[in-house]
Image (cartoon, rainbow, N blue to C red):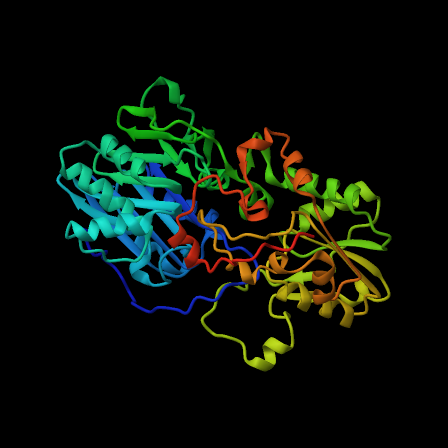
Length: 497
């Protein structure tokens, strides 16, 4: 039976509105450190992963087998303070910062999901989307479960709890649950005996682990951390060991770390993690994503040059590619838009007049940099085109004489079903319009996208090990028709630019 979470402040729900960018999935963090303040370490780990989800946050700690939980709507810094963290003692912990991709935006859906079993309570944090969750949910309801949320996370947790209650241990129960799930799932699970870190067989969403201090993890028990990205390890001064491999399970306990390959791996890391979602200081394949994104700009400059006076980014996500474009082209780099970095999610909506005024709340153009200039604007993606159109208008109003746009990824033509919040296909501008049509709609003089081949080549890795379904429609895990319909997929064939 699932347990209600404690320390819930509000049952407020919000209306979900798709933004003009694909929204990050979720961030998971776990720490095993019997001699440290695990709640505070988890707080800072989630703080570093805040970009992956800004709707809700939660932490569960285990103190000699007893669970303590706090979760609520809001940013990590809003949900937790010193007093709350002091009420979360323990020797290990799991935390989560959420952006909803399945389940509505309400506090009951905040993670970690807490359930009870014959072996005690467990706390499960999930990044991804289980595409057969509806079918699994129906099975749970038929077995007289009472589901307290609308998330696939609770489904995974209840499947695991059932296996424990049927006599299996934590590891066997986790494998049993995961074998029934299809789609993307990177999990951090805290139990009274230790922590589980698990990745789906395709490794679509990232998961890494590391250790604290000078202890060699090969020499017995130590202090460990698990995070969605390496920036989550860096902030707590944990040393990166390696990625949790696709289809791998790690069991972290007082005896150290045990690794099991629970499924045959077929690596398909989401390429958009590298292009946009993950923080530029996070490390993949031995280098920072900043370096990869600069390389995207280098290739883009060679594929789609332009005769302009300066190169400028859409901050912040377009900065590395714009620098790479400037380096490869020899054209000066400049910042022509200043971003208000203190603007976060807000429940106070601007008036219609403010919306019509443009995007000045978040981005403000520098007239003295732009006036009389031919500029090339670099961004990482265009989804609906509404924000791009407002930016272009603001730049023209500031005096730019020509505006050319270059995108450091291919056209987004298909929705994601694996833990990224994208529009339905009919709302994706590149699914229904040619590049020339998009060019006219957003008001630029020229528009060009990076090629799919260029994006993959820039990884300098085996290009078959990435999921790029949002650009190609080639989904590595079959999507059930019911799940497809929930995204309102178009029946017609997308326009090819």
